[in-house]
Image 1 (cartoon, one colour):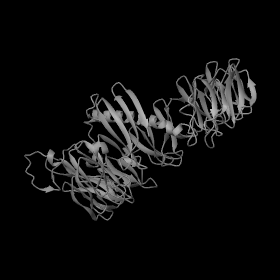
Image 2 (tube, helix red, strand yellow):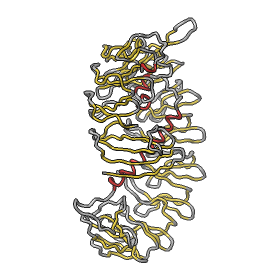
Image 3 (cartoon, helix red, strand yellow):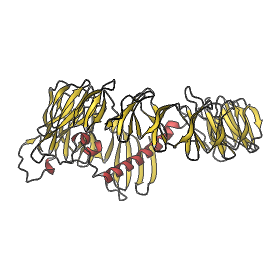
Image 4 (cartoon, one colour):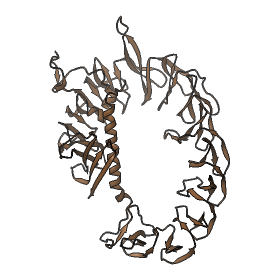
Length: 592
């Protein structure tokens, strides 16, 4: 089961185009998400405008008078509550805002009353922690929303200011003094002296850097790890585990791991390290793998490989054979030439079978349970993981579907079957029009010839890949878990059922049908981006500069992007010109 990369260039273009389109969509939706909205029936005066990222706070929103470029604030009726007389934006936090007027900085409240006035050189408004940085006598410090100086001006610059506090975490600011960086907490205590080239904060710890080496401090100023490790990019996160954040820590050519508080959980003495379960890591040295738990090796370094198993026993390779470790990390079974991770309590396993005197090999596949019992014998040509209690399996060069008890649910008559999703699976047969006319195969099913696929076709991977189905030699349909035909096998591509609607493609155009096969949106789109989300999907027209339909994977093209509902009504639309090679994007946006 291997995926061919013969179409790498094609997929690369697809990815670039999709990323560009996604960026445009994000930009088109930004105003609706972040912009200020007045009460229904009210509008801003013609000379007043909102910043696109503005928001209401204390029922007031920052605004600007375009003719004078002065700032003020309006209420939800668009009436100016804070007059347009300030030289900096008026955005309130805790009913206070730090603003500039002429050459003075002042603290005002929502009634525009001046609370305090300052001789600052520069200042920034309050962040959600209630502190604002200011510059005086060429040094930077902080004031609170009462106007009290809580950190005296003493720093050459603020590299990273106090921002958004996270639950149960201290927040520090990174400052620079005499060319070195340090850290200060909200009470004004310097927790890390200014003696480092750089400081970054992440999770509960501070990374400090000097001379291309990295160390770790906590928010109380304690050194957790000395400055002797190689710099690394950041934490790895895995939502499967409770303690999900960890970092590979490099020292020379060896690696270990720390948790999100900087504690060393795997010493830096291995060639590789990777988390395989909560607080448990696969480690290797000199080409052999073992499992490292809390402060010690749980298994010796003797395995050829240890996999990051998502479910059930850990998959391992030993002396060229695949098997599993039970929960006590004892060997459960090592008898297979091929093995996969568990899914819904069963794992696919396979053994090679000698086929001829030339010693060519084929593999027979079956399933084992979590205690190593072969509950479905190894007699299938190919298999897929169980999903929703069903698995597609291949016998006599055709695919069908079985359940946990190996009952045949779907007959063996398809050339490929996808995984089941929400009770439906995509099925496929070879496209008759692509079969060599010299073939002596006469038997037909639903107008599609029985025909062997090329060796490059990987049934499971291609069937579960929307893009790969779109560029195949197959015809597609949909069945339900009882084997009933939902859509006949006659389409160039189909999507999974999504909110009761199915995308279908024929003659290079996409349309949509109901689960009963009735057309709901005609064939017209050049590409779509399933699934429907809250009744909305993206569908595109792709065309060249002469307004002729062109491939959506072309290096340079124009795209008319629509967001439509399940009846085909346009929710919003976007026109873009994408030059992938030059990475040039021009946008014209319309939103209903």
